[in-house]
Length: 297
Ligand code: PRT
Ligand code: ZN
Image 1 (cartoon, rainbow, N blue to C red):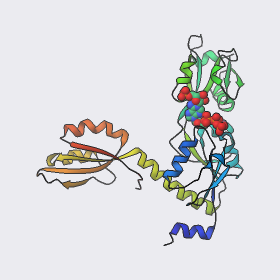
Image 2 (spheres, rainbow, N blue to C red; image 1 turned 60 degrees about the vertical axis):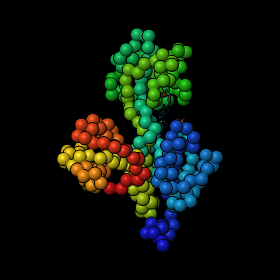
Image 3 (cartoon, helix red, strand yellow; image 1 turned 135 degrees about the vertical axis):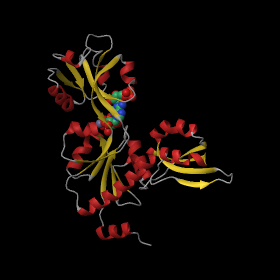
């Protein structure tokens, strides 16, 4: 049977060019997301471009710094890229969706034992960074007259070798700062991987992008939610239903043991930890939490 999608694709005979990082911190998350969206991509790590075998997409493997420009210039139609890079490169692209991986923050950090304690202490000082655009905008906003020294890597060693008084760099766990005896004094941007798009996609390419977005949203919802099964005394069903409202309402099935029911629902994982005590206090037993593969509301 020909699905509506493959039928339309046949008419259109179009592919969506997706740029992802060739190697680095966003590579795994990007490939996993495509895989969970059911898009099969061969071993792209050694090739510049690979056609997906079961979806009208071509994957381009690129350096992350180049992705905003390639998307702007329609070399690629869309890209998975850190928000930090998009803000720094200032290219003309649309931000379409947050992707939930590659989370980090861009922070200003100073030597732990030094005299600089706040952002105002940076007046007249030198800050080393790979993000001169974002930093200069921020300093301007805050009226800080510091000079920016642009370096492309190993920013964290700049204060120790006398290159700068402070740094502005990406932080995730904080261990790089810790091991270099640096401490954050200001977060200037929170970032995660996002999907960017060329501003002038054809109708055909927009159609493929919508189909991809539908899958991405289903995958991301499923990642954040869990299926919950529990047994509860019948007189607590109303209270437990309020705690676990689910997508529409929970499924309630009688147990073989009279006076008891099995309640099935869906809950955001973060919320689950907030209600667990209340579920137990209301007599819930045999609580099972099961991952959901895809979630379409
Ligand atoms: O080769 P290419 O140019 O493609 O890659 P790259 O070396 O420029 O980038 P890469 O792979 O290091 O990072 C790609 C993207 O991952 C970044 O643009 C961010 O959007 C995101 N990301 C998330 C991070 C981090 N977390 C991160 N911790 N990028 C870099 N870091 C570095 C940071 O610069 C510092 O050196 O990790 C160190 C700090 O990490 P912690 O865990 O010690 O705090
Ligand atoms: Zn890079």
